[in-house]
Length: 113
Length: 113
Image (cartoon, rainbow over all chains, first blue to last red; front, side):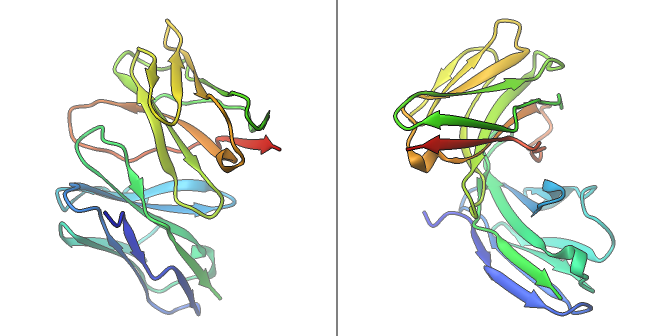
């Protein structure tokens, strides 16, 4: 299995631009998670989906952030408009079952200038 | 979920057993203890989890005290590749589907040659 796939691996953009991060979970997994990691705040849960349905988006910083999961094999995290404080590594993870271990992707390093 | 407390850093000699402590004094009987680690610039990696009993897999052993208020992750023969930040996380089995992980600051384990 290829594991969780994220793209792009690196993204550099200017403030105000729209950014879209993509994630392909492990085939057969029914839960998908988006996390963000910064030096200041560590690893934070942004949003997660069970069976393609968003369950908890309380970690999404503000309305500029949105996430979708149109089918079981694809999810996007969009930031519009982006700001320098959004610079971070964004991780996607997937799991199977209620207490299944989460498998993390390699992350997308976002830099907003 | 119960809060966890871990030492910020630890050293261990290569080839020796690394014992990483975690305090979770507010844990309840239906909460699992999970361990993940994050090697520099990579996504977190699942190691092991347990409820009340000790557990062992190919990566590590998890020793949970009888009162379940603390636990120890044991890497039996540490190698340089085990240098990473180790996170102890408590998760409740709510019966309502998977949920996200709450990461603390973890323990930065440094394996010395």
